[in-house]
Length: 254
Image (cartoon, rainbow, N blue to C red; front, side, top):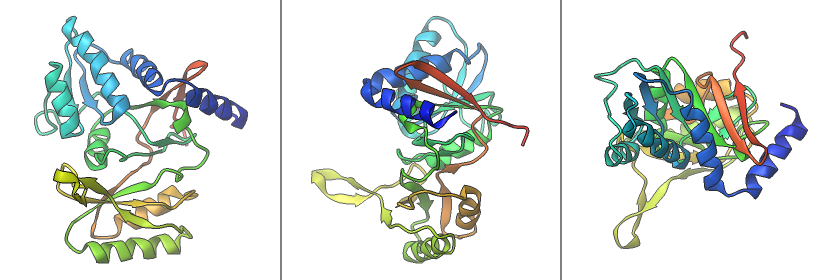
């Protein structure tokens, strides 16, 4: 996609109602779902629009089995009577449909803004194909403007944070690491806890020119459980903008 096309998509997406764009992207993704599929179901506001549309198809007779990537998604599926399984019972999936916080031209992603990155990555890796859905403003030249979520073990948090900072410095990546917080009872601020019982450090690295090098460096740190760089996992991106739907395919020949 040329830069001027990117700009038009992004500007159009920003000018339109965000929820309408999410619904358009989700509806386009639903056309890839076939009767009998084992379906990974993502997390986040765009994925929730997909679940709502999927529930209508299920109510009309479509037969699928879904594996949710978070407790939040599972609760919505149960509410809307979308049949569910687990990866233990359904370890191989036909298709996963999920959102993203950023998407580049090679369909590499930053995910984890909703805190479900570990389960999202496990489900995506268990799928024959992954389709990512988003509004066109999520399409970027280089990943990194959105803070990179890094899921970490509670034990040794300070040491893990120092190790991440050192690894980032070696790669020329500045920026702060911030422990993600949430509001608990009576507005008491406390650390955000993932479905897996871990914490999240949000890394404001800015542009990440070598995502593979950063991925490898983070995976080498024992306290890092997973990170939000989804590399070579998405096969198709469906982007909704002012001019309609744009479908991007990953080049698997290189």
